[in-house]
Image (tube, rainbow, N blue to C red; front, side, top):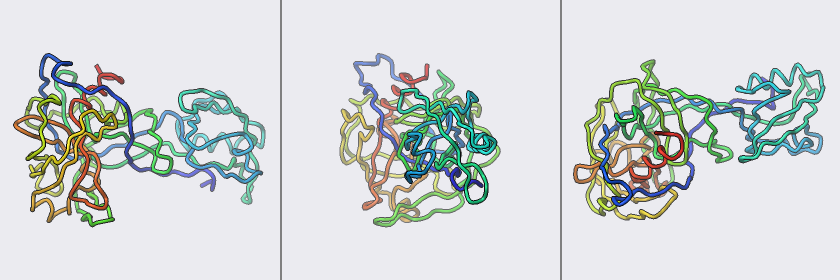
Length: 332
């Protein structure tokens, strides 16, 4: 493979501003099916993301003005959808200039780049790009009124640049958890598993408050009303999560702090108090993002992040923020 164009994939968190839903902003309380089951996803970007540029003065990409986080959408007028496609265009250029259509933030720009021969006599441009990501997460809810689902409670970002990955297309399948890497202070744990061939649906939106899409599988969770922000209290709560072969289980947590006006999605600090879950995982681990948080018979939010230096604690987002972000940025 060309040393300047490589494929990598991962999941990370992101930040996005959305309105907070309160009781006064919504007259009718929404009812959804709560999740807690694991899912696997494969997401392809709209174009390819530049994750690194060779900053040597002789680098074609550097001389052309290409920057990290640029999204290459076209090359010589041809829509680019994969690393391999862009690599093929570069190799077949025979050193002739290539006109790149690029998104820099929300601004479209045009750049002219001149490929050069590398030591293997292949034309190259001196940049690394990414076109997809894959991983595991947890479904938060299924909404029967819109036939949609929400998951993760945070967006999917590029692991190198932190950029929210632009969505081209994506699919969601069922997953099986096979083992646990237990969390320790200073070391993030994780759920390890494999994707199955059983389709759940497709991804239609990736934003700072979650991954959303249309589901094809029949929801298997319990129907439950969603909490307004004014319903949420500090104190005892539970989460639904799948961390082993026993399926979705309910575990005890404590909501220690509320920051409902925080538009970053870090609306709650939760602490795992369930001895069974602490024994299994050490606290909150990667792959549990999206686990529904329940209180007083209502869905109040989802687990989003772990405190690496205190893995029994983490952040949660309110269900109001998740629902409002979906509806504002591409949902119903």
